[in-house]
Image (cartoon, one colour):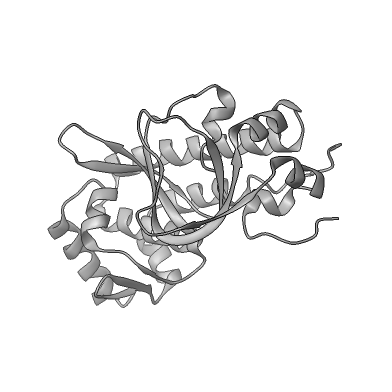
Length: 237
């Protein structure tokens, strides 16, 4: 029996023995906290309990665009289990929160056992690949208002709240657009009474309506990210 429950999808299904072998250490994440940086060694994996982090590609001119999102469904740094030594991307906290870290040596030893941790880690990698591929297609095919609606819904899912702090400048970076484009699209969603925003705080007013305003990509990504751990966990630990 586990001694406590976790909000993180993976930690919540791991038996006590796995939790003990991972030797988790609590971590607090302030807004803007750097978790990974390109070229830096990956020394820990992280399980978010609260908050949200973004993975971005950073270009030579200093601009960036989001290629992945992390919340309570995630494990950050799992590519190290498959041989990656240095991070290829920047990963940093966009919404402050908390979670746990496990040193790479402990996580690698658990992964090498070939049991529940390995299975769920590989399933999560697959879910992340689905997200990346669907997002790439979405960015090329769908209108910006649809993409913004998708992003806001996925962000809300991760922080498990309808209200969060997010500037238009940040949204422009994450969605590979400009602040005026974000402001125009957000204004349309606000006029339709789907969202409200003031001083960097965004609130979803009509989740069902925002879902209809989004494209099919939201449901596809959500399904893979939030159901990958829903299977028989009867492993020997």
